[in-house]
Image (tube, rainbow, N blue to C red; front, top):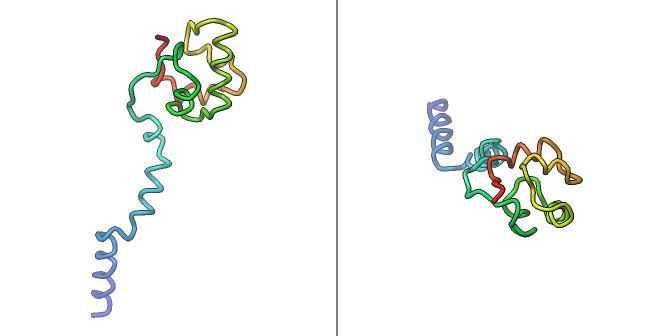
Length: 103
């Protein structure tokens, strides 16, 4: 009897959402979540605020560095040119490649 009561309590907790925070944390950290389909961002015309908001791993300072680089060197001719911006490495580029278009 005791075993069936414990089993019933466990199943009830499972279906009531008591374990939902554990699953939510796993989902939030999932690599697939960072690749959610969004409208492509135009690298050559987006302002720093849009870059910071839409790109993974790009905060306000890096977003401003992208805008500054674009102002100094002209429009990006390739998404790979982001690697020339100080503070942006290959991993950050790969996380954002599918989110970016040149125009």
